[in-house]
Image (cartoon, rainbow, N blue to C red):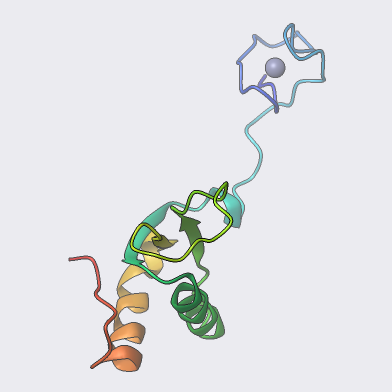
Length: 113
Ligand SMILES: [Zn+2]
């Protein structure tokens, strides 16, 4: 038995997590897209560019996960410290790279080796 909230494991027969006070489940929840293994595709220094890349990849069926490294406490987010990591599912990594090579050849986008 597993607590769906904190992930603690309990022996069969216990129905409730001692810490969270919620009902336990029998197994880990089924894997969904949110549980995909993500791999860093590239880092760009322009959030607009990152959004464009995500839009392009998602239009080709490759889900994207953007991780902004900007400190959002700042009122303005442009400048040399602004970076966005683009993650794609590990099994889509090669396809994503090929798509971007086709689309961005000659641009300033640099793929992570
Ligand atoms: Zn718990």
